[in-house]
Image (cartoon, rainbow, N blue to C red; front, side, top):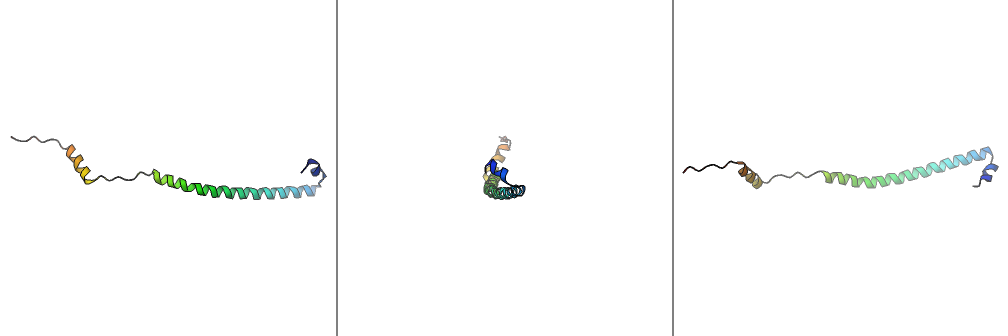
Length: 81
């Protein structure tokens, strides 16, 4: 809209134009916000997966490993001749 057109409008017409522009802006902001929230929800699933993968699995020692480590800790016993 050209500047001259705005000058030709009455106060009531300008107020109505302002109200319509504000309403349209609010609609667009709400639509964009909904788009961004939907995208954020999609991306948050990757965050959940990353947090799950960061937890280290618990590794249990096998019985054969326990025996080996126990044998290494024992002091050698001298044989009696």
